[in-house]
Length: 474
Image (cartoon, rainbow, N blue to C red; front, side, top):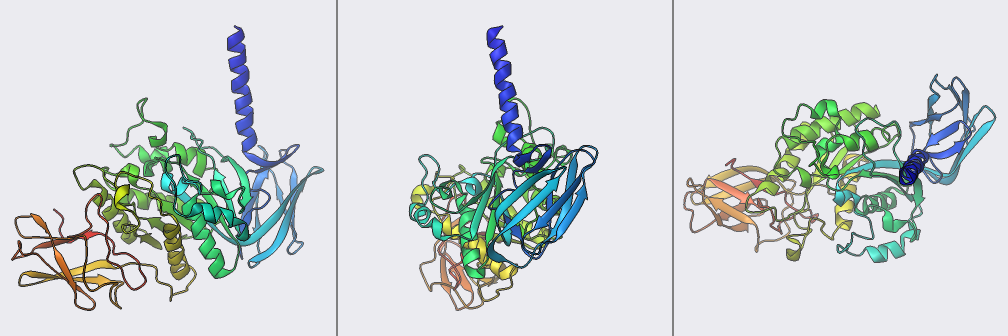
């Protein structure tokens, strides 16, 4: 009986602790969620959402430091309230929000106004600057040491708490400033994205990292949608990180009210070998955009890195689906990573190079979202093929000014009608590549890095890699 009592007491305390994590500021019955905290970044030049709880039917007022305007709302019968607050253009001057109701007051301080991006996915998005155990990252110790210079970068991390039912609030420790104390826990990919974006635009940049290692795309969709996917399992044998819909319910559903500029997505490894990834990703993006109610927010994803998934091409097929998703999703882009691994990382699902991944995402946002068109953001992409004798001429998009080399190309294969692929030689004729092999006199198909693990070396003049491709559908 005594053991049972202490077990119940522990569970009660745990429940109280989890509930407390929902809110960053609590003053009697007046509360705001943990994503609204000191040090946060609010999206500039927008009507941002501010929300929370108060006594049922209470009047809530909010005052901003930037224009002294007062906003009002009345809480519902269950105590919920929400209001739209107009933000100015980006500013590096710390701001304050003061919220009052029934004699209670909450003050949110050291707020910056700038750009806010929402990062999500699985472990390669979650992976912190300090790395994982036995899995270091390249150059992050130095970048942690100097991170106090990134005074315009702020970070909020949503905790990995899944749920079978939708939760109104997500859990976090609130917003953190960039410095050697905090930065080791920041997700590296999005941190490097924010750093370059802030340096280029000279504005504050905030990141909300809402990712869970090992999660599938179905984990970030609601049960009502996933129920139609017959290949998805959810039973006692399913590891928590592979469970469908629990990330959507426990993390995303409590975060979507926060006003943002766009999405960053690094996920796909856990969907290798499963069908219809492009369609499911498109479904997810469309749903998220409907939830945020900010129009077609840009969605930029990272191609999964080369990795040995076994004696097949399931990894290449997933990358092909990621690339295909761009044609299904408006304002979508994919950055390629097939040049950002080392040969010894063939069995490492978490490659050490995250700075270039984050920076390539930033290149895409700077070009396609912020209009800095002279910044290259896409690598060569297969356009078409022409057969001339025993050679295949490959034409590309995003290579109008040529390639990074004239010879020594790696990763090309060519096949005839027998569907047997042989290593191929490629030569550069200026804007196109000529591919051939002595074993294939009547070529039918060409592939480039279309394997689970193959490192490519073909880039355009911006040093952005060629997206792996196949001309066949065998």
